[in-house]
Amino acid sequence: MTTIGIIGAGEVGSQLARAAVAHGYHVVIANSRGPETLTHLVEELGPSARAATAADAAAAGDFVIIAVPLKPANDMPVEQLAGKIVLDTNNYMPWRDGHFPVVDSGEKTVHELRQEQLPTSKVAKAFTHIQAPRLFLSARPVGTPGRHALSVSSDHPEAVELVTRLYDAFGFDTVDNSPLSESWRSGPGQPAWISHTHQTRDQLAAHLAEARRIPYPTRG
Image (cartoon, rainbow, N blue to C red):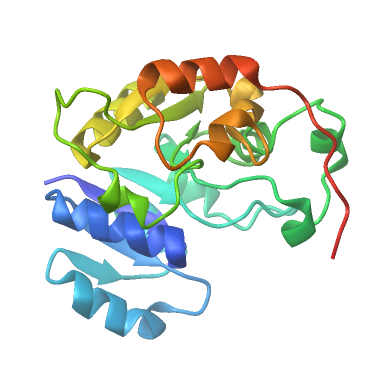
């Protein structure tokens, strides 16, 4: 049975854990406050889930989901994530996390920065332009016409393949928006983001192609 390590137990991390358990995966989930604070969530998820530290979740996962924002100084367990595919659900929101000048300038994306912080891992941007509740609301069986599609970006083909299989299991089609340098195309304010409630594979591909670099506002 595949085990998914999840670092981050907020709205996104918790909902991904629910979806994973519902589709037959084991889950080891962590947050920044300690495993003892996740008792209610783990009880809800049932016997296929347990709480752990971030390092233990990373070590336990066959692959790992990071559902927390990027920080300038890496706070992820590099050693435990070594050699693993890491799904990064983060979006660049400078009003929430502060500005990264190399991202503001378009020189790099936050997902390229995550890859730099995890040099021995294989990072993929995934689950970034769908609201957490829609992981269940929009999911449809394989072969359903007009199925909701999600994008994936990575510098590693094997990471794209894994995310594609996971999307399919969760009920979504896939559009490959690789490499990580193109991951900005599905970010906040872009057509793929604005149309997050439902877009087919063809629509998502068109929305990604329509993306244009936009200035990042400074607020808050």
